[in-house]
Image (tube, rainbow, N blue to C red; front, side, top):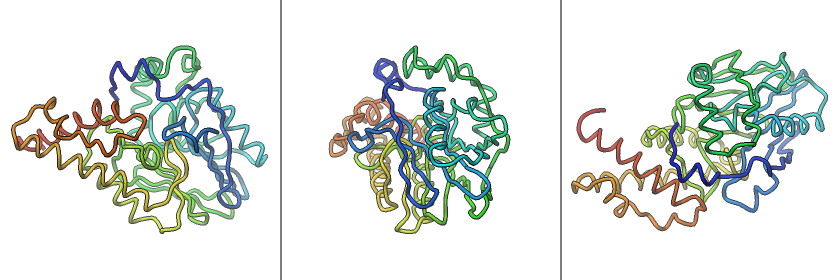
Length: 308
């Protein structure tokens, strides 16, 4: 995962100021969100938990021990049942660094690609996250804890009286993107494959925008229209809201291909792919100009050279 020095000097959110709250979306099904989720278009990491007759499944473990403790505290306010499962939707530190604070008996679930990355690159990733989020945010104290169960495609988890599905629809922001589906409540946690509702844009941190389009399309087709989606860093949304990032990514693809067809450089492509009608997103300059346009250009250029 690579980002720019501009991002390092301006964290997307302050981990020391996040106050987590829970919202019950259906009986025993809770979204966990920062308390400013309705006021901003990009906030700290969202999470959630599902309570069954025999135990609890938690989605995400947050960035550090303080936030993981807040999350566990919200679970304990709702139930004393054991936290039997913990799902990380990706290897990103703000979704998985708090794993170490969960009970030893909790089974950690990740995609195999997430498991490999956290096993092989944890210290390197932690250094990156300290640079991104700032020193003194509790990241220095986190400890690596990877999957007990790796899910390459789909796993049904029986909590007693209800089943929760952990699914991999494909690449969206990382190779190991997982979603968590509570069918009886029609609630889907998607992690960073969707940052937040409009005006938030996708972050193509690892490129592969065409695969992202295909994956988001599959998710859209999978969901009933009355489902609730919990994105990685924003308020709950509906399946129809997926059309916004899809429209953006398709237009991004068209404009960078136009630039390449005209023999333009990446720098010149930034003018052709300016897309100012998306600029109301608070992180537009960074996400669109510094990350997404260069990433999409590189992919389309290699494809034009027959490299893909």
